[in-house]
Structures are given as structure tokens and as C-alpha cells.
Length: 388
Image (cartoon, rainbow, N blue to C red; front, side, top):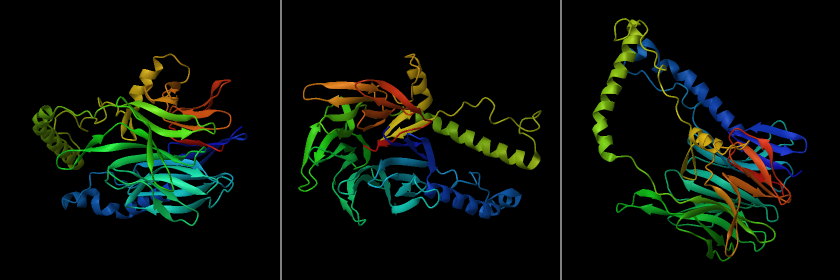
């Protein structure tokens, strides 16, 4: 069995012949522990009756740092056995670390850590020891491809007003494959959206680029080549950015302001008097009663996925195993004149010796000429790699 590494929420998982092995990101764990300790030490300043009388009461979560969203953005095997590299974002920090599954303690090593840049998709070339990664400056709509070599130096490979992402080295010609989408801006230079992603090949020596696949109707992302030269990618429908009704939003502004004021006064009265503004309700209304459950949403490369809604849609196809990735996201093998759909509902994949490994968010699959089978269950898998 080939070794597979994948992310499951904020867990880093290794799957081999001995089973599944899980580890936490040491940086994320320490970040949240420190945030929780700082918040607890400062809680007296902005909580309690005295803080409310001073007008300094903090109505937000006291453990905001602890509850800061944490994401694993990418994962890849390296040239060392059982050692993987992963990229992450937590709070205002982002970086790339090594995780050594052969060690129980002190199993992480620092590669890069930054508060000004976010590190995203990454891949590793075992022959040269070069790591390819996409990154962006905080607040910037553009992404660039860069490479890290053994001594830790970083070299930028792409630049421009575009989102360059998901780099991978081609085993047949040594070119770097990646997807690129132009950044759309208005007359003031403000970001308004992305053009459909196209597949490019970059010569790492001359830095010349060639477009391999583009289509106005589709975005092609995460391109890879196998040893036979076949080109793979995930194909998604190109959709324009949808916005709400601006006139309705303007009309509702006074209503929302009134709701906010009433909610604040209600909270203040209950805190001091123990009674609601409405007579006959000693403890006030239950704020959770009648409230709709918040819909889970994720963003994958700028695409919003409504998790619960997609699960319901995919369940209608009456398949035993289904995920939350839209079925319109298809893993395809690109030929000269046609494209072969290998599987629908795919957000990431890797090329191995035994076949193509892919995930629909909740499962891992192996696609081969002999069989297509599920090899593992997950809760929230968006990234994977195989030790081919």
C-alpha cells in the first residue's frame, strides 16, 4: 500500500499499511493555548459589573484568540521518510512546518513563519529538494508561486495581477505546472472578482510560460502530469460573482440598527435586573429558541461551498458514500481533443503508482484501471498527497 498524507480539519493524518496516524499542528495548538492564557489574564478588565459600569464591557468572545479560525492550506511528502510539510493559517499568522511521523515528541521543525504573508498550496520535488508554494500578501487578491531550496532561500517565480496557485513539478519535462486566474478590478482599481483559471507550464530556468488549457466556461485548477505525460486537472464551472439586491440592503439598514439597539438594551436589563423588558418573562426570552442553525460554509480557492446544502444535493444521487464538494467539480484527464471525467465531486487529488487518489471532502478514493474504491473516511479533508 502506498503512503498517503492528508488533512482532516486541523489534523494531519498519515495512512499506511499499519493504519491511520493522526497528529495536531504544534504551532496551532501553542497559538491557541497562548491566546487562551492571555485572554484569561485580561478577562477582569472587560467583564463583570464594574466593567459594564465603566462602559468598557466587552460583548465579544473572551477567548477570541482561542477561537480564531485555523486552516491547513496544503500538505506534501518530502524527501525524508515519514516527514511531511504542511502550510497553515491561524489568526494573523501563517507558515510552513515539517511534521515527522517517526517521532512522538518535538516532531515539528520550522521552515518559514510570517505575519505579513499567507502560505497556501505546496508540493515537493524529491530529486532537487525544492519546495514549491503559492503565497500572498495579507489583504492582497493576487497570489504568486515561489520556491524554497535546501538552504532555506526563497525565490519568486511568478508575478503580476493574477492568482497563481497550486504549483506542481512535471516529471516529464521539469516544467512547473500551476493554475492562474486574472484579477478583475473596477475603474478605481478595487478587486471585483477572478477570471476563469487556466493551466500554465513555467520553465524554471528561462521563466517562460505556456498556456496548456483554458476555457471561458470552466476553471481548470491543480494541474499535474503523470510519468506517461498525461495531464490531469480539476474542472469547475466558471461562475460570475453574485451580489445581493443593493436597494433592499439600503432599506433594511434602519431595521437592523433598531434590532441592534433593542438587543443591547435587553442584554443590559437582564444582566442587572434579572428580568426581561417584556413582563411575564422573568429570565427573558431564550436567545437560542427559534434561532436557525447556522449553515456551515467554507471557501476553497475563492469558491464558496455551503456544506450542508451540498450534502443534501449529493445524497439525492443515492450513492453509498458522498461528500460535500459540488458534483460539478470534476477530476478530468485532458487529451488533445477530449477530456475524460474520472470522478465528480473532487476537491483535491494525487497521482500514485497504483492509481489516482482523490477526496470529496468526507472520503478518500483510489481510482485505477482495475477498480474505483473508497480507502478511508474523513470528516473534513481538503488536501492530500501520496508518497509515490
